[in-house]
Length: 418
Image (cartoon, rainbow, N blue to C red; front, top):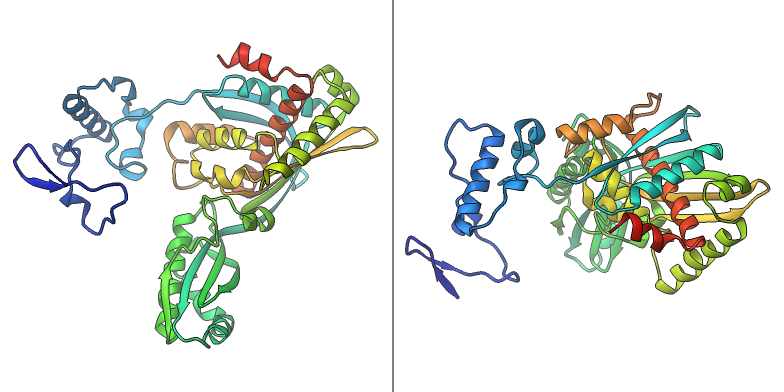
């Protein structure tokens, strides 16, 4: 199929299923968003693009306009052909009393970016209940940011030899990867194969950044080095999906990725009655039915109430990569009877977070990140951030569990989520 442009040039029309081997410049968009006057500020460039889109498509986009103070460096670093921004309301929940893995206590202040009515109110109630019950205890393991390099062995009997080569040459290829950034350190690796395909997955400490780009660059260098030093090996791709980046997988759920964090608290009968307006027995029954029976029927990878809600709200507010909510939602919440009342915990196996890079430096996101990290501790900032997210998730789990136990979930959404 073909279409005529305004200038009379014939341009092929590609379907969404077409391979795209040609430079993007050969297929310009209907609106020229690239050729802008010289000397414009970032916010002015956004305004010019928005005005061109409005004129060409006869549509009103004025509510997406942003000021220089709001946009920061987004036009240069975060969004190509930026023409504006979509504001997301941010609500406050807290304070939430916690004890970090460093044994330091603090009160968290949670900025939740959401358009779902009742969410902030619910998390706020969870914060109150957990704080009155003695707070949240946090622990974490840093697995590192991972990337899987995929190779294909060209000879039938070469897989075992290649795996042996990778093991013997670990010092060499890991050194190649670490030379790509002064902020990267290889923590561990795995080697797996399926048929004549071999996957080398590296796990890296990326300092204060979440680091996917950093690890991808390192993985590319490793893949190229391997094929230069090992015959009959084809370097297929730098991202072979074993790492399950931005995708749910049993591997990530079981083994962890990024930061694996556990948040735990004990709810007394008094708190359950006075703050959560429910009963111990009712909450236990709902937890068993929902988290165990219902999740098993569904074949769920994570047995939780709504962990993704809080992970998404905190990620959006603090400039994290929103797509990593996928891994963040692979959480398991458990509720058990104890002498004091109920012990409730949530394990989040894969929180991919950072305080540098991505959207963390944008003006509003940076301020929300500063709010969330306002308690000063001896922990690495990224570790503190991951543990803080997990604490917020537990607050959300506690409150929703109580709402379902007392049959007030629908009422809350009717009153607050219209």
